[in-house]
Length: 236
Length: 236
DNA sequence: CTACACACGTGAAGC
DNA sequence: TGCTTCACGTGTGTA
Image (cartoon, rainbow over all chains, first blue to last red; front, side):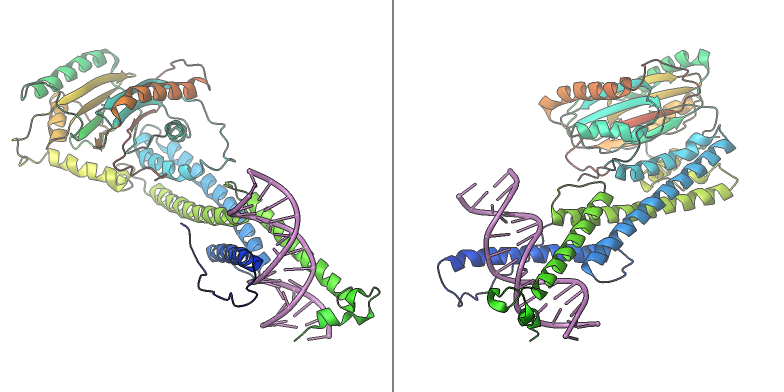
């Protein structure tokens, strides 16, 4: 972090070896270091800007400003283009779009993280409808949060902001987007069947007792059924 | 050598040592203007950068550098995303391409899916300890199964076998492995805080009413905290 | 020689 | 109180 360019060794104390000169010399070297540091910063700024008109001190800052404005403008253009492309994709096949958009959702989550600290990002997003919220403590140092809601824009961001405000680190965040739903008269029946089957599988092989959860690795498995398109299912 | 700036002003009005009255004052005001201009540039730079940590002179440049680097990185990501979106748009087959766009972490999930149908997988595995099992019906055609258990070998396989026996197709399956755990005395407190924060965020922006879940896209978000390794955490 | 840009040492102002 | 940051006037070098 700190680039400590200590300009020691300048034992030029031979001149004016008075009383106040020692104090002044300390201030002198401090100021010199400060100027050096600022000059280095400015040099780094010049290095970060590809287009440099002049090596002038003021020109460096001017070019940096123009470059920043260009980058901001281009960022807006690119995001608009992405929005347009995504909306085009959505219109093509609205039934299957959710799986195609899953990677996009994950990727845009990363990019939009950078925008969090950008105050100019408009928060005029749709409200989030929370259908289910579950917070489970796993052992001593981990929490598992399962949140099911409708997918609007910046849903991940807004949720992550909540966690960030709580000083919690995110280990992994899995997003699953669903569109197809199970049949109405089957769903309650399926719930019971799945619960029974899993528990039977689990309990038939060992005594169902909770052991020390602290050292154990945990697996959280999300799963859903749909007739729309099960592309991960090789039985299709 | 060029001491004209001091000694040239012999034709000065006031004596004042006769050295530097007119010419030196011109230089003084020039230098002052130069400093003013540079300070204004730096002020404009600070205005162009959204995130400002301190109003410090050096901090302005430092923040500008970081901001520029963030913008450059984000520009690269956005362009990559556009490239992918356009290439996907050219392909008219949206069936299987989405797996190529998955992150590596998610793609490895697919390889494990391939192992499901590998009959050579040994069945001499440790028993699965189910810590939590939850089956939720979402709308008409989808179920959401959340299973938390210890991670042994072939856990995914055995769970998927259960679903296979029930003639259910898997849309997506997310695995999250945790090792670090939260502190014992904090976990209950954190549960309440997270629940409150998320609900507050959600309810402050809309009336908390359940609408038609069938057409809505759903997002399931898994999240956990750990001090061991926060790979997705950019604040590290 | 002018013009310009920079670094220097120093005093002042704000925590 | 000391410490930091800043602006000032000035000397020096370069185009």
